[in-house]
Image (cartoon, rainbow, N blue to C red; front, top):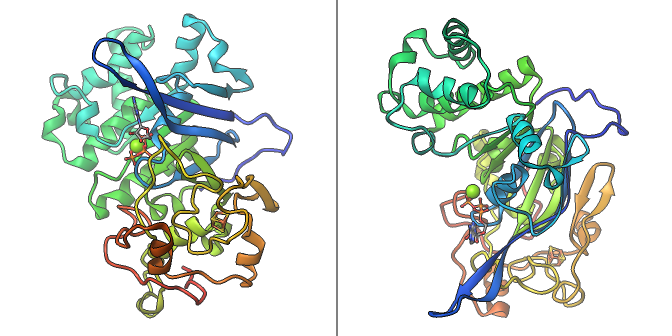
Length: 382
Ligand SMILES: Nc1ncnc2c1ncn2[C@@H]1O[C@H](COP(=O)(O)OP(=O)(O)OP(=O)(O)O)[C@@H](O)[C@H]1O
Ligand code: SF4
Ligand SMILES: [Mg+2]
């Protein structure tokens, strides 16, 4: 987590306004007909001040990667705007877009898949520099590679080796070195540690944090696990079916999650203290994530929400509104839930009303063991 030196009026480095990415669903043998759309990202507003880390979490398929790719214009937004230093990325022609892309780089989940196995580390690290006409002569490139390897904690001898000769954590270090080679302002890290063992995850997250502080980077860190983004994020956004359902300063979100979905996710995060862990109540959600091609009406979470009410939830889309300074929540009943005036139903009861089965937890990857169905006590906080 960084100390973010911004005034409220400063233009954030990145701002998304009503961003939507809808993928057409095609059918037909002779004629390609569009029979519907997958609403992967469906109206997201967020901003990231320079030097800050925004952690974006949500379960598999909720649109996190598509959002990251739309920022880089690797997929075209259907609607809305991506503003980088106030400039609409969609308005840029090829050359200015290429220059801007240099300033936004991505770290991928699978370092092995994203690194060409036929290139050694030196070649992998100099490739982006050469592509942008940077780096100068071979002496300068050699020095640059040494600096990059040093920055990510790899030995100088690594330059002659190939991706398959490294461990998963080391490969991710190469991926990070490649991403920072062009000295970007914004780094989008899409599940940067989810392919790594637990013990290595912390090392890579520490490296990202250290680099951010040294290089003044701005981060968008995407994860399906709240625990991963907890310590490095200034602000955390929780996504469900293409939309943000909650956004808050990281400490406040972990201290008191306000949206029912965030509460369910949080209840799946293990607590290091064995006594607290023993008492931790887990919220089991009914059914699976609905299809983004046919999202539920009203509040999209209503088909699984333990706090769903007879009025408003099924037919009125809740706005993402500010409940407290910096705390945005899209739930009609957020105040009543926060104040303990409404009680959650058990997963079995929710499942019965929706005609689905109980079985999935808050999200695959958030929690694997079976969780408690009915929760009518406060959730133990970390
Ligand atoms: N190119 C595409 N064409 C059609 N549908 C797509 C495309 N890319 C993604 N989708 C769909 O959009 C939705 C969001 O996908 P996305 O990969 O952004 O989710 P995610 O949150 O990153 O999931 P994960 O945690 O599994 O990586 C999914 O339903 C996915 O199947
Ligand atoms: S609006 Fe209703 S269904 Fe949606 S999260 Fe709030 S209580 Fe649950
Ligand atoms: Mg993804």
